[in-house]
Image (spheres, rainbow, N blue to C red):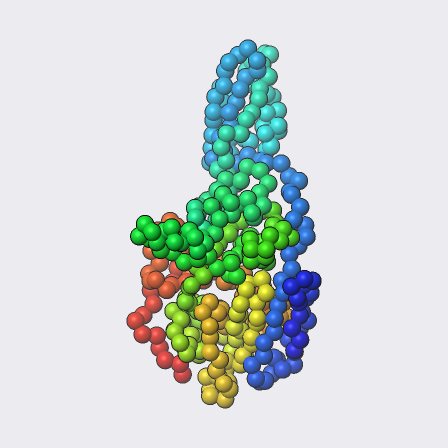
Length: 362
C-alpha cells in the first residue's frame, strides 16, 4: 500500500482495493487526499432570483411618491395593486419588473415606470452552526465565500472567546478545524479549514450555494461514531481501551446482510483522512486482532463489498457529515431525539432511544 497525496500537490490514490483487502489479510490502512473542484473558487454567474419569503419594495416612477413593500408568498406570487397574483418565483429583479409592468398594462392605460428593490432575503440561506460565536441561518442575497459566511457567524470559537465565556460563568470547547466541514446536497466538500483559517490559504475559500451547511464541531469531543449496517447508528462515548468490536456492540451489533470483511475506520482530518479496512468477521471470531479506537474515529459497517477506496471513503464521509448536520439542526430547533448519544443516521428516520446496556458481542 502506498500513501498518496501531500500538503503541496494533492494527488489521488489508486482507487481499487488491493488484493490484501479483498481477502482475509491483516488490517490495512491508507491515507486519502480529497481535492477541491477549481470551479468552486469562481463566483457564480447566475443572478439572484426571487423565492418565497423574499421582500421587495415596489416603487412607482418619479412624481408618484407611491411605494410599497411586499413579500413573495409561499406560492411564489406577489399581490400588488390590481394584480390578482403575479408569479415571480425564479425570476431576477429585472425580469420581475418587466412582468409587473406588463401586468399593470391590463388595468392602467399608461402605467408609470416601476422599480424593484430587494429589501429582505428568506428564500436563499446558508447554515453556520456549531462552535462559532454567532451560529445561525444567514440570508444569501449575493455570491458568498466560506470566509464571508464564517465572518457573519463571528468566526470559530477560539481559546480567547472561550476564556471570555468562562469569565461570565460559561464555558465551551474550542472549534475543531480538522473536522469542520461544508455539506452541499448530501455531499461533503473537501474544504480544509485549517489551511483556510490558520494559514490563510485562499485556495480553500470556495463560493457557497444556497442551502450549504457549515459545521464547526467541538475540539474536545470524546465520541466514536458508529454508522452503516448496525442496529443503532449512534455516537458512542469514548473510553480508554475502546475497540472496533466494543464500539459496534454499543450500537447493538450488525444487522443481517452487513458485509463484515470491509468494516472501515476513518481517522484524522476529514479532508485528509486515514482509511483502515479490517476483517471484522475474523475479529469477532477471535481469528484476528481488534484495533483500539481514538476520539472522533468513524466506524462504518458496509452493506456490500467495495472495490474502489475513493468511492468508499466518500460514501463514509458523506454519511457522517450528513448525519452530523441533521443532528446539529435538530439541536438548534430543540426537537428531542431520545438520548444524549443518539446520532440520527441518514435516510433511516429518528431512532429509538438506546437501551441501558447494549447486547454483548457474539
